[in-house]
Length: 345
Image 1 (spheres, rainbow, N blue to C red):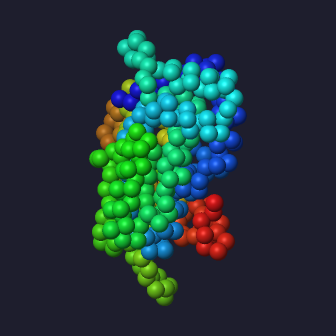
Image 2: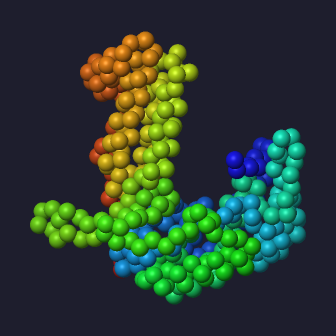
């Protein structure tokens, strides 16, 4: 279990106020390779980097994750990074107090000399402030760095460049008192028929188009919900249709399912996700039919009849077809082209 430090309401208000003051100051200096927890930037902007760079020919990818990033950031070095742009002593004193808040476990407050409390409003900003040192030290000649908080990828031209980038990345993290997570660190070669990588919930793999309507088949980087994302979706659907909710009206269950499916699909629709959307909806229909059969103490066939035949719209369960948007190189995830074929900064 990951320890979380959830502040009291008044402390969250103070942290939010401090975030409003500090974020614009540091945001002015953050680099384009950073995407996580930044205004007007999203995970889909980071995902577009992989599409663009793969199209350019960078098909050797270093993927890694910083081990225990939020809990491993040294307080003194973090404050040094903050003091590069902030000199107001009351603000610095308040920030130090937030860092020393600690985590309560089994009724005991544990205060560490490292880490920014995960769960606090100010923590994502502090993470970006500290990892900005990594962004600043990175040389583009080592590869195209893409960082979303503590998840990183480096797109490279060759295996030798990827190995050098991984060594450089490990050295820079060591200078910051951090290290890559060994279980999630590897070098992937994106090629047709080869493996892929998971990044920000999507699985990315190089495939070839079918060349319909007389078009020439081309190789492109496709993405769809990763296996872990699919399993989490199934777990959530199973939880919403669990036996302990049998006393609830089925329309309430459908509302809960629609609320989850709508949010899940809103994120994963920007990808080649149609096939996996179909699997998730069929699973949701199966669980809903099973819920109705158990609620009425009837067979599964009865539940399927209610869902599939006795209701014209399958009890109002949201449809996931026709909403997928295929990503394109040099075109942001909203569908707007980028001038000159360059990524939108």
